[in-house]
Image (cartoon, rainbow over all chains, first blue to last red):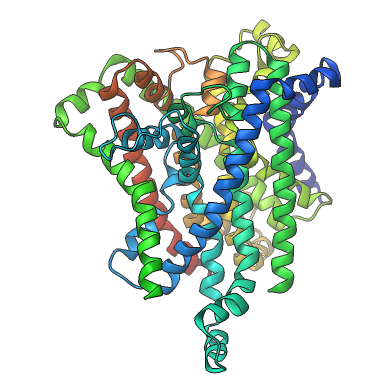
Length: 259
Length: 265
């Protein structure tokens, strides 16, 4: 290792440690502060448990919705030509650029108590799912789209000329090629959804046992000065995210091996 | 037939999830003309929130740009043990809930922690103050600059840098004359993404700022506070401003991205 590399590496590791690694380690450390018994009681406290179950359940549902809708949208963007396609292509990324609190507010304007459509989803679990759908929209679209662009159309034509129907071609030719990217995008959407805070704050109303997600539960525990309890739930979220990311890494390697 | 059904599903989904909600809020903000919009945005609290937001986001973008370029060069141009692990650490912030980021920083830099107590005895308050908000913003936006330039650095290769070095250029000269021009569009793209994320951060900043009105309140915190206080016009005006910034960001990234590709070819 050259001297320049070592010096640069030292600075980078120090910076990362001060801002990211030591603080995150402090969360895990604090969660065990009062022993494993307190940790267990913190995460199985009725409100915390309800928040964690809602978060993981709603995130899994939203991830599955994204798997289907994201693939359809990516397909339409790559294979279909119609006026307005370029606009659709551009605005797909809007949830990445829009602050989450604004996302929550705009959803509340259309699907809240003053909804011009007459659909009131405020303070309901459907509202939470809607907020998560909004912030995770681009993930599957943006992972599937490049793979679909690269996909060789000749294989599909060959399948069709050998007598395969459109459904058979999709299932036997297209789907196996897209699957790694589809699942990677789904895993990313899931990780994002379990971490989500800002967009759910306004539309969920934060009702414990009903619409309170884990991040909001952590927030209220911090406000109530129970940092050890907040750290315990945070640790669970970190572990779930870690599992999802390791799965994602395995999926990507699997995809590369097949590609 | 199937083609039209899929197109209809995709367009309707994006319409009802994205376009109509965002469009509605812009419509309602300007429903009473531009007067009330500007009135809300020029209130002392709103002006102060603008100032805090720009200060925090500005400092965070500078920090993340320097770090991002440095770590990208390190990951692409240098060999060392643990390289994959470092790459994973750089991406880690993306998987952490903003609220957990806030909690993590309070635990280390809060008044009742050893480090925070020491800093406070030196007269530096981190939590409930600007430094904490900057660190929180740096945390959440950390990978954006690095991830934008890494693929371009890889594609460029290091032949030109080697040549410059052989001809006697210093490290700084090589970086300024060779590397920087090569990655400028990707860097611009990463900067825009990083700035947008920094301006829009809510959760982490909500925790570490203590949400003190007229002191540590940013634009996103203003949106929430105005809304909870039944000032819909104020909340919508700030939200629309942030939404318009997001739209500009989006268009800028679209402009920068294709250039990035042709640069690489």
